[in-house]
Length: 321
Image (cartoon, rainbow, N blue to C red):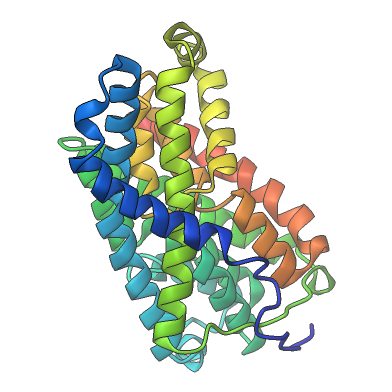
């Protein structure tokens, strides 16, 4: 396993379009609320604008708070803390690392370099991967956001916590049993200062929030209601459809509950699958994982995580929801 540190811009790709889109749309939300809203007279446009603005406005405070906590952890918590805090036995280190995600928040973008740094400092890969999956899925910011998105439905919050933790720990244990060192080519990369991490993660994740809000609003307006009803009425198809949608939309975990709540035609278990799969498997994560740990890792880790995330959603959703 190599500890090579790549150039500052390695693996990030073009940074300009998504931040520009994020800043532009936030400004349009402010202007549009007072200038354009009175002129949206068509029912379809009014519905689209209402859904889009509601998703973005409700999710943005949680996104900012979650990214700030994630940046603080990346900048101020030394990686040596983990080697002291985790049990020496790998089989025990996996669930402890998974549970650590509940108290040490991190967005998807931050969890990959954090896990990479943990591996580079001697933490067993299975435990680092369990933390990578659980941190963006069960941290307090995400759970509070889920409670706000699903008011009066505490079981949805509990189901999200349980299903995400089960999936993360099971992936860690399976990787501990069957994973091979040569499958991981670790290229550790640090964000740097708190301000740099905050700026990068906020603009990056915020851009995907805007894309997700646009897609969800369009889905609610453009796709005929009978199509959604037809898909939503078939349990297996609806769960797989929302799991695939979560992969494609790549929404930040601090915001995905608001998008899930807007998909009112689907069952609670299907919405749960959307929220469990998204923080663990999406397009930006696949690219980031492949760039950080290598293609040999990604082609094995992604299908395993996706299958277990859907399975955990079915199991927990069937019991609690």
